[in-house]
Amino acid sequence: MALIAKDIIETIQMIEKDNLDIRTTTMGISLFDCISHNPIITAEKIYDKVTKKAARLVKTAEEIGKEFGIPIINKRISVTPVAMLGSGADRDDYVEIAFALDRAAEETGVDFIGGYSALVQKGFTATDLEFLASIPQALAQTQKVCSSVNVGSSKAGINMDAVKWMGSIIKETAYLTKEKDSIGCAKFVVFANAVEDNPFMAGAFHGPGEPEAVINVGVSGPGVVKSALEKVEGMAMDVVAETIKRTAFKITRAGMLVGKEMSQRVGVPFGIMDLSLAPTPKVGDSVAEILEIMGLEKCGTHGTTAALALLNDAVKKGGIMASSHVGGLSGAFIPVSEDAGMIDAVISGALTFDKLEAMTSVCSVGIDMVAVSGDTSESTLSAIIADEAAIGVINNKTTAVRIIPAYGKKVGDIVNFGGLLGSAPVMAISEYSSEDFIARGGRIPAPVHSFKN
Image (spheres, rainbow, N blue to C red):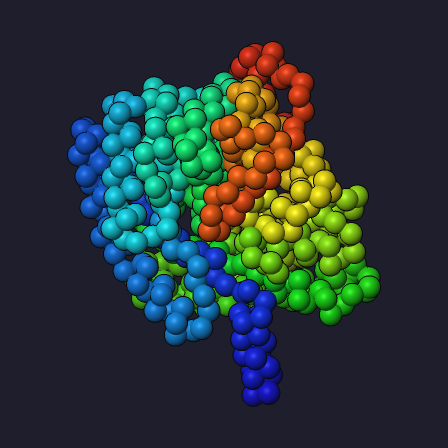
């Protein structure tokens, strides 16, 4: 009984003092049965199904949060990649589907709905081409729709024709949402090795291998890990790793409790726990601050990549022991605008774009919520995506780019998005051209280690 009481007291402290929360409960919904010969009918069926399936999602999450005393910050929906649903659809038809998704998100009360997505790592279908052309307009004219495109995988290599197009999509989206600091780009992610069960936005989609519907949970607790490490200051890295593992175990158990309860109450099977440490702009809820607690004067200095690798690995090891079903991205996120410590490190000059790219080789995702100058060229944006895709493909891990070429902004300016999206200092990138490289197109072949069958 004494041990149980201690665990309860520890959990209460993690919630009240260390910013422990359930970052998201995401309901994945399959929409394959909504496909119709008429895209307008498809859009109507999508609205009807999403609003019916997720009718009780938000209310149930709020009830559980109050009963258990654990904040559940975001309630979200992910759906089947929309590019797969538009039989005979053109660009305007896809935009209508985006409107239907946005209305469904509004009706159900969720924060975001993800899955306005395409999987084109090996090439395009005719409907893929129409879908990709629709993305900027869809993001500019909706509030809650999030979009993603998978352009590479360790099995297929990298579709450089798709990579080239991504730079154009990002630039157009930035222009269409220029009155709001190009915020449309914050709802768009380009992946390599995208996973089918990711509960985090903006990259969530309900993959074709997923069941009819599912509840996926993303738990977060950078503040809890930081607090635990403060108690082992100066001790060896073995102790640091073990402390993070034990802390991740406790965090994950709290998430499992919520996930199982959500599943039971809404009548949808439990899917996976995503173990990612997702920061917020709130001071004390920062991945960068965890790295600094390990002994770095500032996030971005030499040793940062090693510290992040230790953190990512220890989080996975601790979380896996606490859940039978681990998935999503799982590890440590490093979104610049959403992490108070990262923002401070960029402003101080300690964290550069190149160092951030190096860190993406060992973190959960990649270049995330990074603002660059509004006059950054399409080819440069595409080249940044190509670099990240290469890191993912070669290392057999998920990587992604969520980058904002903030219209009218220059290096040193601050772009404000509000809420959990935070604010981003506009970062300097290389001034040299990659245009001829991107213009080649074609496919970068899969690496030799992909041939394992």
